[in-house]
Length: 341
Image (tube, rainbow, N blue to C red; front, top):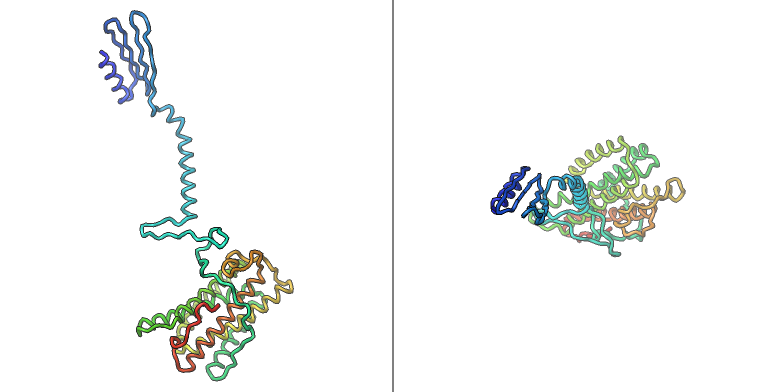
């Protein structure tokens, strides 16, 4: 009889039905009730209650209803936490690519993905800013006058708005290094020759100019028509410089050398307006502080000073490259100025 009661109870638990089973055997009264997901078993012997107990399934419907809202909230919180982790940390992919943990010298986490600590440097401010290549031949004079003509519409459009002028200047200045490095790269592949380090040197220059632009964008927000002008000028200049470098690398580098001289002049005027109070000397962007290893309390004046020094170095590199070509040699025959900022 006990087996019949237990069997009935188990079937009730499995089927989830509510019923009552009772039986009499040898003066014993057994009663098993399954109600929802709990059951009560009790009995009597000769009119005396011999005991009772009640057992509830752990997965009963009532507790489940009570816990459901809390479980949903926990799931939402976990999802939000996971989303934050995915945004903050680059997870390892199937290809095993992940960013290693990089810290500053003071132990704080490195916040930038666009450049790493080993790519930063302290600008050489001792460079001669007044150095000028005097035009000596037709190519030099053509390059010099071309740059002077290009400056006229720039002065008319921007006047003394040197922040916007710098944005335009850097979108153009970052093109020659990329074009020169790309064409030297293709030449190296075609002729199975080393470049003498000049591919890397010119690409370093392009990257450095791009970082100038990223810094200036943190300080100045170009208007819509200035952005449109950037697109137009960059498209025209890239194609024109590409064709020019194919025809005459010495002329191309000489033009860039004179463009850098004009950049030095523009940033010098920018500094004059900062010092006179015409332009507010705001705190330096965090990106600039890390990239040029500036003090934490650096200002706009410090940023423009190091950018001007960079332009002076680019001036020297391009005039040097043009001189190599004028001597009838290839760039790979002369040591490349790697890391020359």
